[in-house]
Structures are given as structure tokens and as C-alpha cells.
Length: 232
Ligand SMILES: *Cc1c(COP(=O)(O)O)cnc(C)c1O
Image (tube, rainbow, N blue to C red; front, side):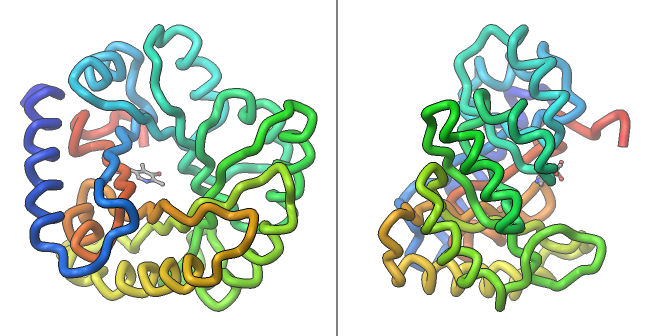
């Protein structure tokens, strides 16, 4: 299947999942992020030329190499773990950072954003399942971190992100998505003054339909669009 065909299929699946969904979704649309890690710029262009408006990458170096030669207007989302010492490099380029998981990192983003005269949109990454191998704050730490980020003037907290455990049957991770949705609604209801809680980033190739059914409005799909990645 071509990238175009894959995208058509995924768009149709997204519509189906939205129709099945029983929850109130933040905003009423779902944005599909094409995860382009390990994909060359040719493939990225093909996705963009077939309707993709946002790409997701997990390595700062890779973004800095590919974006200048891409020659397409596209939103850039950082979805992988971000080290404090890379903040300075990525901030001029990135639209939304999905992976803020400590006050220390947020403070560094705040410091660099101030220098650039930018307000940086971020999400808090939540490790809902408490997996030791995953980054992210635990659910019970999320609200405290959100309150702390609310005090950082150059950072705008826009929502939450999670990576569900990899399982054969995506039904198994539905409770994870339900839990993040609850946390999201709690955060939104707090109406913290300097936040704009609007994005719930959950769902990947294997589980995006379930995530959408449970309220996701940002889904991050890589292999479903481009096929299997070569180097992982
Ligand atoms: C790689 C990656 C994805 C996409 O995974 P696929 O299974 O290829 O869809 C989504 N989110 C994050 C954080 C990733 O690192």
C-alpha cells in the first residue's frame, strides 16, 4: 500500500472511531500527526502532499537535519524524551513538545523561550501504567506539575500525552486511555490561568482507534502510514 492509500484508510478509521466514541472530546476534531522518525524527506513530502499538516519526531538531531531540506510548511511536534541540554537547539523549530516530564525540563524550556521571545506550547507526558521503562510523571504527580508549569510565563501547558504499553490486543489498554482522559478533564476543570488545556495526545498505529473512542484528539501514527521502520 502507498502512503496515500494508508492515509486514506487511517482517515476513514479516525472518522469511524469518532462516531463510535461516547465521550465529550476536547475540540471536536482529531488531528493526525505523522510520526516521521527514521523516514526520509521524500516519504515526509509524500505524506504532507496527501494531507498531513503535522509531523512528529523523537530525536532533536533528526529534526534539525530533515526540516531545513523538507521544503514544506508543516507543524513540528517533538514526541520523544527531551534532555535539558537539547532545549536550546530544538526550541526555535518546535510547535508542540509532548514530553515534558519534570519541572527542571520545563524551567529550562521557560528560560530558553524567554530568550527567543517565544511562548512554548507543551504537554505533560504521563506514565499512566507506571512502567519502569517509560518516561513520564505518574498520574498522581500530574496536577502538581501542571500547577508548577502554570507559574512559568514562557511555557503554555496545553494538555497531556501518554504512550500506552505495547500489547497484542489494543482493547487491553483501553483503561489507560480512560484514566488519562479523566485526568485531562480534571486538569481542564481547574482552569489554571496561564494554561490552555486543549490537547489529549494518545494513540499510535496499534491503538489509535481505541484512544479516539476514549477521547484522544491528537494521535501519533508512524508505521500505519509509512510501513515498518528500518532501523529500530
Ligand atoms: C514512534 C512513536 C510513535 C509512532 O509509533 P507507531 O507504532 O509507528 O505508530 C508514536 N508516539 C511516540 C512517542 C513514538 O515514539
